[in-house]
Image (spheres, rainbow, N blue to C red):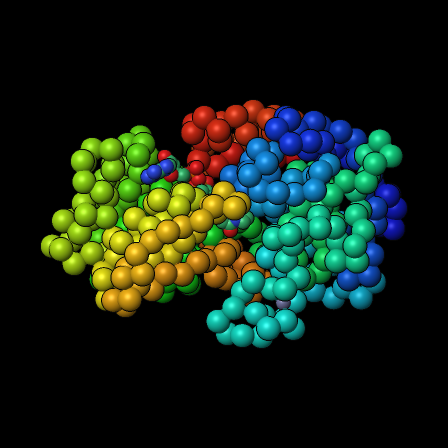
Length: 376
Ligand code: COD
Ligand code: ZN
Ligand code: ZN
């Protein structure tokens, strides 16, 4: 029997308040309104940003349905939706692409003004929510909310992908993989023969290593304080790895030493710390080096640094969702994955049933997982 046009009762993981485990509840998911799409989520990854909301570091309105790195199948569409139809395999987009705002119209931009990342309202574009639980309205998370069997997103925040794509893998293209890989190939536009340094070898940093490799970098130096991260980084393309704890001098000096006093062409901060952001900047070539900030710093943190670091010509830039225009890039990245251009398996250390979501967060916090994917 078709569920189109009806309220769907299903399971979702609800974050009722900050610093509390998620609780699996029965929720009601309203039908999609005009220009909205209801998706049956089949796989969703657990990303550090979800945990940042639980810990309070990433401020969001509660109660909320978290999750933003997912893949699923369209269940039904609201009036006027033409980009997808029921049955299509899709990936929700936490950075939407409306095609009309200044960032969407600029060839250089990707942060569509319809995003709900900063000063988040936690609501659909019309200012309402499609989720209720125990009579209370639940907030939506960064245009997606995927820790649920069904979610509703705006048509600008979803894209159709290859019908043959394995959803329990390509869900990572919804956030972690694309963020890290794009920082190298799209934001920095690493050239063949470059020397790169990647600070932080978690799931996003490893994806940056893959991006550097795909771009033809000849040296990729992994930097992490946890040496257990090195074997996998080398498997993904790092040519050498260094642990800042093994040296008395600052890591930027160590990297200058490793590059005959020149510094690296490209450095990437994929940790989310202000000290490593400055160290990564200081590690790149003083004139034409580029340093890309990928890690999200704690809200309200600030950096003091010598302006001489950029006066001599260095470029310091940020990268959100790997700099990709989401609707255009995500289906292409899925095709590239299907064509064997890169692997996602090494990033997926755990696949768990949805009910074990809190276990997945524990694996993330203890550093035991790279990515856990929840399946329904
Ligand atoms: N020096 C070197 N390495 C360090 C240091 C240090 N001082 N401190 C920690 N590390 C290492 C850790 O050992 C770890 O291996 C790595 O840094 C961080 O990895 P994870 O696993 O904690 O994190 P990831 O790879 O999942 O990355 C998450 C980011 C930290 C990059 C996080 O900020 C993020 O998800 N950014 C994406 C930005 C974004 O677009 N967010 C919006 C929606 S997600
Ligand atoms: Zn994420
Ligand atoms: Zn836009």
